[in-house]
Structures are given as structure tokens and as C-alpha cells.
Length: 116
Image 1 (tube, rainbow, N blue to C red):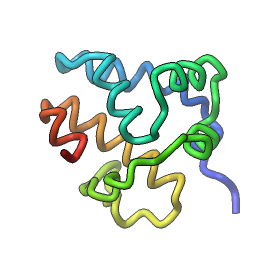
Image 2 (tube, one colour; image 1 turned 180 degrees about the vertical axis):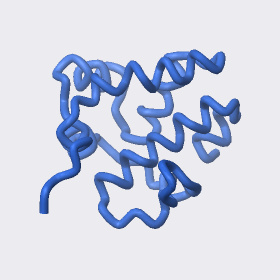
Image 3 (cartoon, rainbow, N blue to C red; image 1 turned 90 degrees about the vertical axis):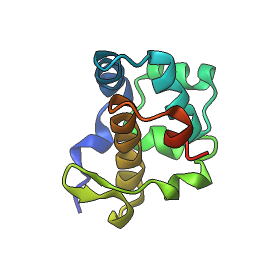
């Protein structure tokens, strides 16, 4: 089976779009970073290293220090698909992140986004 194109895309090439989407709605880059760190377990230095290395999405999630166990509480539709129904693990992680960024851009409180 052929890998989905997003797996080989550089995380660093999509990251500015996450930030732009958030900032357009009055949110901040630091909030985007907090979401990514919460989801993946990277610290800020680790996140910046991955961005500098232009790591692809697949590697970004494979090398994540500790995927947050609470991420399974993320529910809803992204790109017309329910995130909880995605069977391929890497795609599900990518869509979890997309969903969290969407929630941020929609003005949801960080406490709710981070499932506290």
C-alpha cells in the first residue's frame, strides 16, 4: 500500500499554517506550541529541533517522546472524517493535531482543548 502524501511532508512546512490559522483568530504561536507539546510529549527544544530538521510527519509522530494518553478523548469530525474512527495510527495522530488546532481557532478554552 502506498503511503499517504502527508506522511512524507515536512512537519515544518505545515507548522506555519497551524500558527497562521490560530493567529488569524486571535490566538498565539505559544498556544499552538503548547497543544503540540501536550499531544506529543516534546518539550519546546525538542519541538524546535524537529522543525529545524524538517522532519516528516511520520517520523515526527514516531519520535514523539510520549503521546498523551488523553488524546483518545479527542472526538469530532475533521476533513469529513470522525477522528475516533480513523484506523491508521499515524493518520489518526495527524488528525488529532488538526482537530486541536481547529478547536483553538474556534476560540475554545485551552483547558478544554487539552482535555483537563
